[in-house]
Figure 1: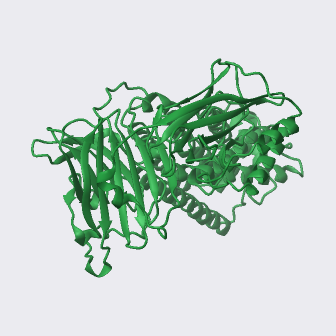
Figure 2 (figure 1 turned 180 degrees about the horizontal axis):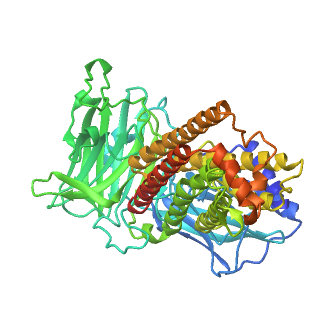
Length: 635
């Protein structure tokens, strides 16, 4: 409770602080005092139990610096941090980008951790802004618990890296009325739980590609007075005869896109090319101004191991644009998904297909008329092992809900009469089969949930209007229903009880609700990176259509033969005094009268049709489950 109050007061403090803008606000000790007064403790003597470190000791304008707070001992954890950057004049500088979803920005001009979950490490990203001059000190306040707070104990100093940008200073500087607010987005496949797209499966060891250490930093600034977008691509660890590219696509998938490629030739000459990738064409085609805007190279060089490609996009004259094939002209106002890829150049310096482990499509949207910085770091060695739990979770859920649960539901609803005369351990065969399948489904569902829980280290998906959050909510509700279904059945009334109908309705409602929610959860999962192949989504659409069709077919058959039986003068088991519960729990010795009763109710043709439909359903469910599992482990 104390932590929540402290973070609330920190936020209130930020609202009245003149330095809420990190670029010009001076830091006040007011927030320090609020922390100490609320906890009613004095600052704790500095300890070596925690450290603060950065990805590099020098900074360059707009180049990201990763800052990590972590404990030095496995059993030492903390519940909160407060982080800020100051120059030599104690002015807060730069901007922060979070990589941990439980961190909030803009608190007294800094960054704070807003979760009460104990942690051993937190990583953030700091971006030096254009007004940063001289040494910068990154300071951290660490809240270990209610009684232990470290202030002025953990600091690091960053020194400026001198780089001559005189050749394109005029191109990157903005006029006074130019849009200056810069938003930042970080894609880091090594520090977040975002599912990456590599070809390594969970149980296969593969050699990393030559692009395994490549990282791409793309920054563009928009001058709204002259309607020009200036783009700077900084590519790290790119080797000779390799290319790195950013694409802008309307879909979150590799395919149709406007591509801007930075090439490092065999002689280390740097070249900028513009391409289009129409209709999922594996080999990009050269593009010109007819595809929207004119590309003007500004700087192309290889400096200190970093490839710099700078260019501008201008003259977006809509009347001149002509749509080529399936791709629409590039627009400064349209929203695009950023696509990243790295590959080799052939002997004629044409790009070959990207490496299987060196491409991705980001879920966020970007626009060319908004300032943006995007960092993409490739690491092909981290995916196979880290995603094993996710892949197993997906495979278990697919087989459980597509094959096992669906079959158990069909047997329970449509085979009570067909299998009522066959007994297993003194119970009707339909009931024994239904109980076995649903029990297995419940066990496997809980097991699958544990796999994803372990992968997320017990944390929950960030709340928000995202498919991941929707998937987590629909999934956990379905899991809860499945978990409690056996207990509901265990405490059901006796077959001849007048309250038995209450159990029947509750049992059916909970079961069908869980089944429908599972379909929604599986469909949402097809949008995740682990199922990036759109064929998986097509198979889920096929499955949804089949489920509707199979239920309709069974209902038509059952209704037709019930109507036919009523016309023939037979009694209907569903309206007679004999209950389904009596069929389920009758001893095997009573099968004589039961057999005669059921034979009147369901003839041979009806049973055959139902058996054929059930066999077809099982076959289709097996095929779809296998294909979905293949997609999960091959993405």
